Length: 438
Ligand SMILES: [Zn+2]
Image (cartoon, rainbow, N blue to C red; front, side, top):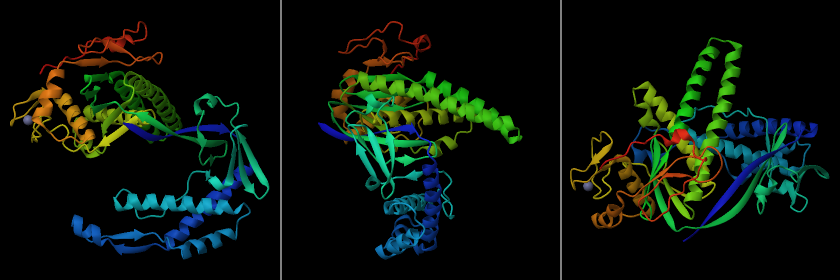
């Protein structure tokens, strides 16, 4: 099976130019003006379709003006105060619409207030028509005014070797740098699929070719908790209006991000190397409510930390392999053999009252996620044929914090050979893990 995916890599080039600052000032001023005009022309209508379907109280939803007449008038209006090339006005209008559309989406979902979006950050998003890329010289020429150009070279950039075969997307100008997205279409042959269940201690995977895979996440989650705790303290200082609090907070946020992102990236790289040509199935993450319900403060903290990491890991894997996100509903509650939904699930072991299956809770969830990503229904025969013989096939994977080589630190009873990378494995990961008994 051949799958296509678009890869985007974002890199920045530092650039200080008074003309860029001026352009940005004009850009955000005009952008706000465009948003103001669109906002003033919004009409509010009853959402009849949703009213019937969801049966909630009558609510008016915003309709953003999109007629070509309106757009033309808006363009003419903005053009009056435009010292730059015409396409810059089009770039502004497009950005204004994307801001308004995303506000509308969040508003309808109840996630945004009924107040006009304000442009706070200084930036200017370019358009393809304003750019000319010389791939030989590795120079991007951006039109400011007719016959006045800004040249950005990425010829000697540190990331040169990482963007071979990539095309330049629409750049974003900032006061001190240029953000360049590099894009490429990639094709993957998919020969295997793994369904992953994310839990606080590990990622538990299931594949009918390998069996069960356990990826240890403990060092990552504890690193996150340490920083969250530090951040919380810094926040307390900040709320007492001490100047140092805010700086401290920034420092910790920055460190946390760097440190954890590094580990997450390593997990991802090692996983994609260990399982090449594989499609990875994850649950779509929208479990906010589930976390809020937890009364135990430490548990809540731990869950939140884990969530951030899962999201990042999925995002990183998406950059390197094919990911399929599935509906998370009842993946832990459903029996992976007969499909029965258990109402009150407690503890580490899943017991099915209908077919009598007794299996580790996380293993059960990973099989369910596998079934969902492949679009297979629950079937007793399939389970007995593909899962039963693999119940004791377990692959324990730890993260090598030094180096980029994959690491399996425990042998597996299946067909794969265990790799024993000496000196690559962090000793902390070699702590005995809980062995599940089913
Ligand atoms: Zn069952």
